[in-house]
Image 1 (tube, rainbow, N blue to C red):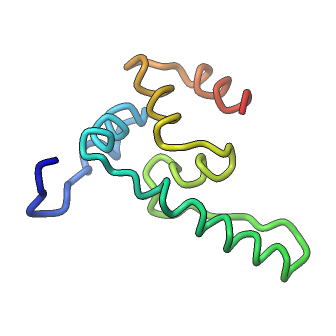
Image 2 (cartoon, rainbow, N blue to C red):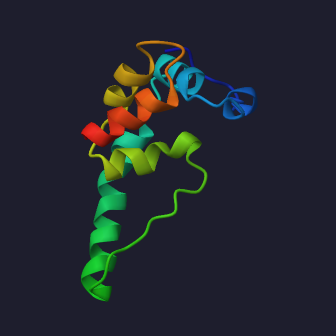
Length: 103
């Protein structure tokens, strides 16, 4: 992988309705941090649940397209998201909704 000398600028990608370009670029860059941090986030949520004895809501700030939330809520990996969202450039919202409902 080509080493980056500066942080990648995703500004033009973040404004798009679909995560297609974002996931395509993160796959190209081999960016898989959400897979690595998922166990930590799940552990923290479980600890809070055990302490509070009630469901915990997680606000996914700063996570492009809610990637961390999707991985946690639907027990997915980045590769599974890539496989679905990158199979066609123009997926409809209904196709995405159906994908998540099946999980």
